[in-house]
Length: 506
Image (cartoon, rainbow, N blue to C red; front, side, top):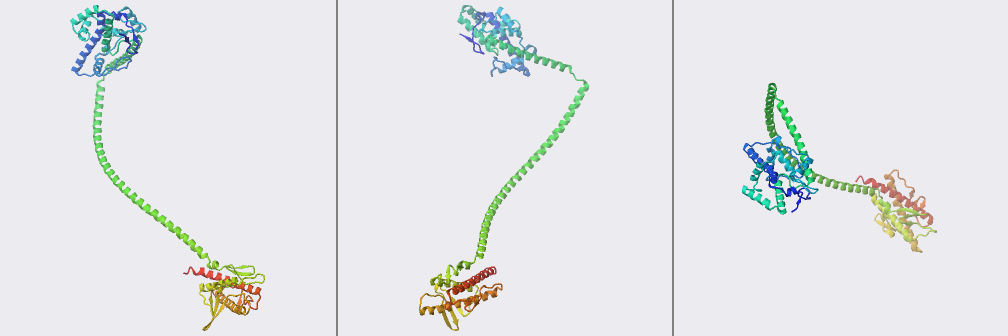
């Protein structure tokens, strides 16, 4: 059987004095523990009968001291409360003195690996009970049923002690002694020398702290005994007490009033909360309607903006169309060298620049169509003549009463009598066109006094140049046709102005 330190788990070597422990020495070690336990039991019964409570003293947590279990916590607390102030301390000698004493007495010695588990018990026993006597040991043996249950058992144990003095028996006795010591105190045994020294230092520190606490209590008790109140001071304190009681009653009344006011305020708060809930619901409904209205307004504004954009586009398009002259696009009058042109067709012919009759006839057809269109636009009715535009085969009809003479406004390049006959009718048609142009010119100048055409027309001449083809030179005929187209362009501008001026009135 081997022993280890209960704190550092270091293996221990038991001292020979402990191995050769006699019955009387064992009784001396165990007797103070048993006496202390008996004293605690008696004090616990007294406190239970008196039902008095004591203030808890200051506690310290020490390393190596067991925490009391749930079953023994009440006993440990009663143990701490049982002793009076003067008897609740353990007076420990210096470790060196203990070591010196243990070397000469029956205490336990150890080497570097031995322990002194009984040194603390010896000092404790000397403090609580003084020196252990034979009667105390006998009383402890009677109370400890685990160690010795009856006198006969003690006699048998003592007889067996001497007979069974073997090593195993001594180890069992030492182990049992350590178990009893550990169960009867807050410290587990055995302990090595270093752990024992540390425990002693901790206990000495605790002793110093508790001593200072005891001195403070004693000094406070002296101050309390010395500070007795006089009659005047007692009367003054009574007056103050009465004033405080009156103030307390007033404060209680005020408190009751405040509590009633608090109840009223709580009721008012509840009503306000209900009102707030209804207002929140109304607010939610309002915002829902507001959102719906906002969506409708946004849709309306988008539609309005799109309509405005369409309207602006249409207005711009209308203005553009008003400024557009359809006649200028339909009848483009210009010149190509010595020739006057209408829509790209040359009107006239020269020996140096021969022009096909198909082109000349097409140009005359465009000229007659232009004259016819302007007359219809201006709602003008020609006298004596009626224009029949038919492209390259247009003609002019002369009305004299019931008879109608038709003149072809196109020529031909055939030779012979047929050509002479056709050219004569062609000349009458050109003269008729020039006469119609003069009628339209007079009408335009009458409508617009500021309008004066550049070339005057007199019978078959325009600008003193004859428009007839027979008995005329090609240069003069071509120039006369160019003058005619120039006057046509002026009449075209007049018709365009009339168009723009008449549109607003509609």
